[in-house]
Image (cartoon, rainbow, N blue to C red; front, side, top):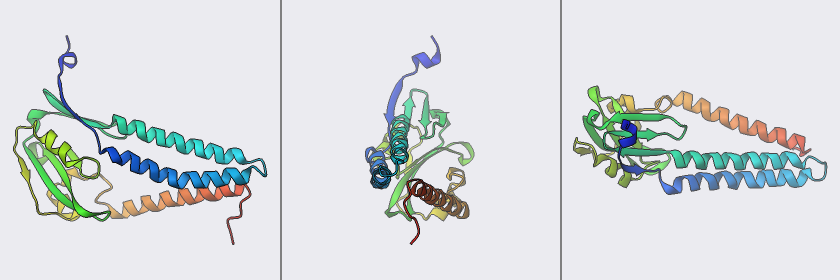
Length: 210
């Protein structure tokens, strides 16, 4: 019998339940009126299929988001901790590799109150696992920490993003401490959305200029 066959799962935590619902509702609130209007106007000139296809693509995207959400998890086994990310990434490390567990609170421009973050550190303060309060509940963080040998250190004094990145340089995602790149990415996404609206409007003969 292989090691995988005899592995015992002790705990599995999933992201916040309301997260996918909030994202899905936000997408639908924007997509339904836009594609509904394009479909209605397209009926008169035979281009209604464009709006319908757009609506189906949006629905498929929402289904994809829900499926990926269901596959996102952190699992504690008798030997390791395994993280499956939203985009399919897989991170695993032995529970004995953890040398420190920190619970900190950070400020975020989008959240009025400081959000908790759990950091599991290994040798040389290398970040093995990061659980952000945006996606994971504080209860889930405590549950994972309870299966690690190092006693969780709690820092109640909230940090700024800059202080957090300085304290835990290996924990930041590549775009988090690059505000210029983040701004370019947001601008590019907005440009793509606007271009798509203009193209669809032109195809169904909807005027886009005053």
